[in-house]
Length: 353
Ligand code: SF4
Ligand code: SF4
Image (cartoon, rainbow, N blue to C red):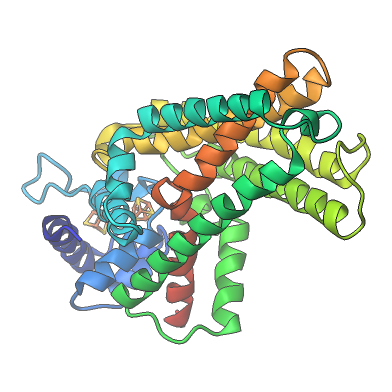
């Protein structure tokens, strides 16, 4: 990890530890105040507990032009992004994606979509509707490894992260507490329940929390749609395409709508927010991740509307290309943030505060 980023965050954490004005703002400050000195692992853990609400920056009397020049949201964001990049496996890919996220995601989406179109031109027709474009066997052959590889890569990264932050043996109570905090996004409510100042310094707002919730639950519903389709296929021998009142559609359609709204909202909030309080050099990677999810949601909904029309094969190729790009890039995009944040919440639960 970059020692200059850790050093700067440590300097700022030490000032906050003396000041203590932001005591009740978020889970970062109780964790910070519990220490007298900060190891590199402590700073990494604090960085992954911070969710960049920016409340502490706008409340702080020591921001520039004060000589302390505090900007804790940016200092922690820099360490946080660096921690994902340096724990990403194989090494180096995280940094490349964060710097060039939009062109990489676009190239991967178009490249994979072209491959699906070529596969359609040369492959065998394998069944009805979507399977007449890409056979079920080919989909499984491509997506099974594309799903398992990112999980393995993230597992390797999380193991290293756990060592870095000095994690202890994980108990069920820690995991339950962490999932509880993540599920209702408690920390995004702000210290006093007024929300955060992400997009506008003077205005407390729950917009970011709501956009995160739409995105997360939309994504989980889409994932449930895929899982239910797989179970119907392999356990009950019920093969797609599925009807409107089937589980894959009942999960997938609302999931796609929530995901599209959530990601569009998050992108608009990000465009309004001050980039000086975010991580340096990570804007492209974060925006690419949001836009990729938005495209997956919109192309999935467009597929439903297109039915069996002549444009369906092109939309399907683009949708599958986007999903494949999303899976393969997961360990290097902001998607990794969800896993590291959960690990940070488990570690925080172990402190017993
Ligand atoms: S961010 Fe500023 S006001 Fe808040 S605890 Fe740190 S030094 Fe004090
Ligand atoms: S930006 Fe928000 S979450 Fe991060 S340390 Fe400041 S108050 Fe806490």
